Amino acid sequence: MRVTSLLAASLVLLCTAGCRSSWKRDGSFEPRLEAPAIGRACTSVECGTAPTVGRVMPGDTLVGELKPEQGCQCFFFEGVEYTLLDFDFTAEGCGEAPSLSVEDPEGVPVELEATTKGGSTTARGLVLRRTGTYKGTICKAAGESEVLYRFAYTLRLAGQDDQRFFLTPASKEAVSFVATRGANCMLTLRPEHACGCVPKVVTVKGPDGTRALAVENQIEGAPPARVTLERDNVRTLRFFAAKPGRYTVTVASEDGTEGDCLAHVNVVPAVSPGRRLFHDNHDCPEGGGCPPSSVASLR
Image 1: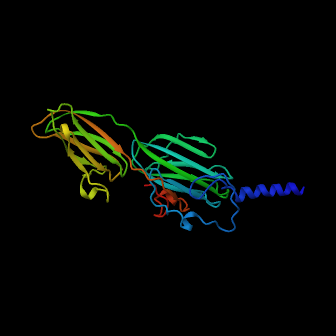
Image 2: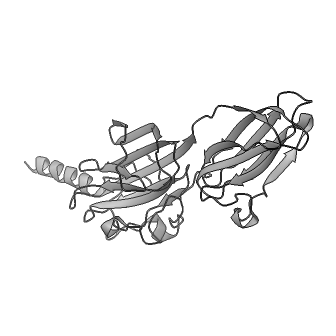
Image 3: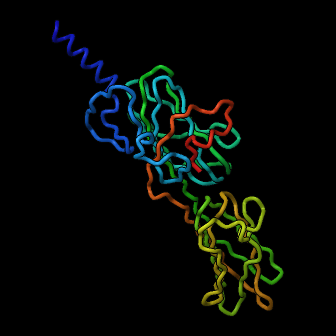
């Protein structure tokens, strides 16, 4: 009888103090049993061993902890229309697995066509329909045991077909594409005949309708925008997107030239160097509004 009681007590201890047996505070997993802590555990942020969460980019990993008295935590990330969202969500705890939901900038739930296996949920290629701040919510039943979770996401840009134009000096042909903030954008205008048109870039408008190449609209520290004329009259535009959303480039040909031209767009999204950041344990803001500045914001 005494052996049975000791065994039962050991199982209870494992479930109350050792639920994070395979979880490491740097966001990774390791199969081991941690000794039960006495008193309030020191989180990585409080101990100064991890950066304070404020800005998280695609490629970062957000690590969070839902305490027993908490029901939900929220995080926010910047999405762009017609980009493809991939995410990985992993949770560990003794109770029921927490739920994950995502709302678009207008508060409409995003249908998460995801695959769940054990404590991990994975989704690939979810099409975002709006540009703006998306809200993710992770919830468990209040009063249940502590849950540790990890969330990582990337945004991919769908491929864009080349466009063909017949350009004249009076042309106002538009090349449109979407970009995430900080993306490296390149537009190549290639004449189909060397003796044909000499293409030129007339205007570049950003998501807010302003001049995207204006000095005041550049990202601080980024290389300046460039429009160059290269061999065989190929015109190339290069710039870094200061705002997320749709960009529109108006093109024509230089005076005295006209002809067929091929427009090729290449947008390379900015990616984080793989940082691990920690949620600061704030509850979700009431009323669905924006969180305090210290709450995890994926921007």
